[in-house]
Length: 246
Image (cartoon, rainbow, N blue to C red; front, top):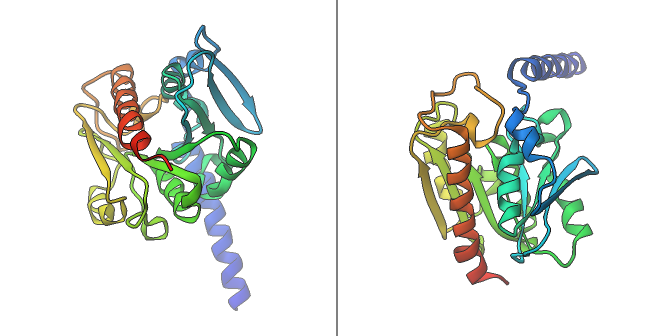
């Protein structure tokens, strides 16, 4: 009976994953596809299921690893990644199995191992941020900072004793982020955490993939929200992170 119960649970989980993939899975926008092309300031390539945005000229001395939200294609974060790289921050956007970071929590390991001369911050959008915090919790000596886009750490990814800083960016029209869980889990954020709220932004516009089920209606454009997120991250990288680099 126990074996049958396990098999039954696995079947139910599989069905839920398939349903979620087709119900929530979103396609990157045309804006995202355009941002994934090389420009005068950024080279873009895909290797080992990772989108890499590399500055052609300036190098800020810090690299960014971004984990996508649940059922969101990595390409959807190309506008943000391109913006960061244009400002000198090499950015890696990780493609996840079934577009779920829960199945790829440790994908950052390969990036870090293959770039021993780089220093890294890690973070993500929604579920991606939760999984990024768990990676940072288990690999704190490899990380200089953690960022959360409409996300938060859970107990398994507690960073309350972390020596590095964090940043939490939310949006006022976000109806997908569980506000109760977010407030409950603030205690797991690093002691040095910067809080930023994007007025008029929503959950889906942290990426570029169109409307998300259950989300609020944004009163600012996706481009505006991406620019505000970019500016907040760059300010944090240039101040909180760089001033405490180990």
